[in-house]
Length: 354
Ligand SMILES: [Ca+2]
Image 1 (cartoon, rainbow, N blue to C red):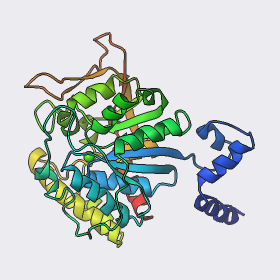
Image 2 (image 1 turned 90 degrees about the vertical axis):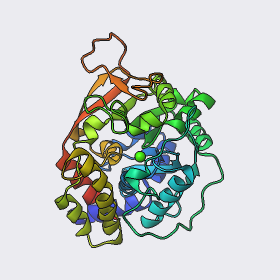
Image 3 (image 1 turned 45 degrees about the vertical axis):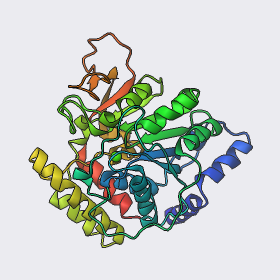
Image 4 (image 1 turned 120 degrees about the vertical axis):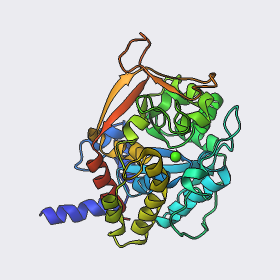
């Protein structure tokens, strides 16, 4: 009986939760996306847009999202960050093809920060941004629509508060989208972002984390937008370190994807091991996706966070009012604790299914 149920569940997953959702909604059973599925013994699906600047850790985050049936990835937008835009949009497509998802809509977004010259991080990620795995040039094409227009259009056209935005790089595209259509702020279900740091200090300057440092003006627009924000700062991501054992687990999958993940992590961690004196480097971006799948492995506090945009010394610093001493309204769920073993177990389990 149980086996029959599992087979039926797999079949149902194959025909897509969206179809079921539309069917159920059409019959007038319920109206909200999440509430609809609660009556069924199925995982809830969550529609997400990923905005990213791959980056080896971005690549792992994208693979995790594509491997997770609970997530419906509506599209992936590239932004200039770790490497210039023509490389981040290439790398997104490399990863989609690696995951056998050449159908995924991929868009080019902003090629520079709002007000400043682009700062990149080839010293961490290699000249391609995705060094460490030998993968072919992508065949799939970029969409012709600009990524910012895709973001605005999707949030405005999908049901209210049904789209979660996952930001894995500088926040330029979301800031441009907010400037173009301020109404998206009240329509986005949740914004989950990797960026910032307070207790750990910075990783590109003593005060600033890279994503926020590259475009602090965009970060200011986003942090003051009123969107519900969950933030993964260095204070959290520095706890999820790769290690020889964890990398070996990916290689032991015996798949092309497992080998690519292991190669990326080995490349990526060399720089961080030297920098931090640790065994392994922090895998920043996948936290944004693991949070959507297993929020219970994280610990957070709802606090006020502001970004410094002026100071030469502390530009891009995220000032986190952890103790509530400013009297300012909280605007960010600031994640500070993580169960690192549970994080790696989930990442490995899901990527093993690709
Ligand atoms: Ca990134």
